[in-house]
Length: 434
Ligand code: HEM
Ligand SMILES: Nc1nc2c(c(=O)[nH]1)N[C@H]1C(S)=C(S)[C@@H](COP(=O)(O)O)O[C@H]1N2
Ligand SMILES: [Mo]
Image (cartoon, rainbow, N blue to C red; front, side, top):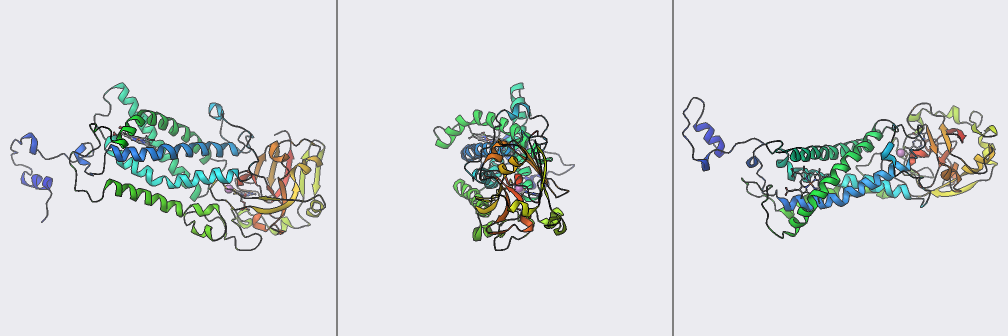
């Protein structure tokens, strides 16, 4: 029978037996997480923690910045349509009018945000693993300063886990816009990043010394009771890096069309397989899912209602086809991180529609779908987006009529905007006074 040293001792001096006084050296080691000797991995140490810290320093900074951009891209200023976040207050200080150039802007920023976030998961988990003994140190607080530091660590660790979990759930399940995910992830990001900045400021000097190994400091992360190593520190880093690369390789394909998309095993697959042909690119919500029926979209039934300064105009699809038509090459780029390459859209310029109801200088617009339920049935666009000559109410894509799933009879397409602003099955556009 194999018995560990502690088991043997426990067995030898069981209940009811007199315990001889141990000399301090050979006293059995306490086996709770609160004791440093509980943590036996010989890999733990400041070097590993610091290397992982530097990867996170760069990665999480980019994650935070692209996240802030993603928020700005929704036109949250056009509340309450696009954004139900109550009172952004100070946190909205940086908001600006999201530009329409370059036309692939959101495709890039959100592709980086989601892909990088997923790729950093193994690094985050490894970093937490590397410092886990410290989370259990007793006493919980030695002084007021120490208590404050531990509270900030709670916000750091809790914030990190919260942001990663809500982010992944949002991508993989059904994201709720502009419902609960959105303010939670936004407010959570500020809490997490505040704690992150404080932690980075406190630890970076030591982390620099640790990776250079300039001097061997007393290293509290080194186990006082190390087990035999089964992998080297560099081997462990290789494992973490390999895990990250695997996630990267199975995610990044969602930013491309063709065979590359097939490699995106971890990407959400939307409502339907897009198939081939002119409409053969990623579909988010299908017409069936949105409850949009052919009877409502036929030439006889469907009318586009434009409302503005000079009143209301109703147009059938053939009325629209008699207006000047233009083409724009633009992608769909979803908040979930996936995007398509440029598709060839053809339709009426949004600014020409604004002119039909009295605006030579295009104002903001509220776009409403004939879809009756669901979070994406309406969205607001800013004046700069309406004014861009590439912004269309598209009637065709890639040389053919829009397919039902891509928004037939008409859908909005705007350069550089998040997909959620590209309303499908448009029924009404209200210009000005949002
Ligand atoms: C998601 C981000 C991060 C999380 C959740 C995190 C978490 C932690 C925790 C809980 C500790 C133990 C604190 C203690 O009681 O001393 C720690 C220690 C440390 N962290 Fe981080 N950290 C993060 C990012 C960073 C960054 C960006 C750096 C700097 C480059 C860094 C460098 C360090 C260092 C040097 C230590 C001390 C290791 C030692 O005791 O020798 N961490 N981290
Ligand atoms: N009416 C309506 N429009 C909508 C949506 C929707 O669910 N309903 N989804 C939006 C989202 S989140 C995206 S990413 C794009 C996707 O367009 P696609 O399905 O043509 O690729 O449509 C947008 N327009
Ligand atoms: Mo989307």
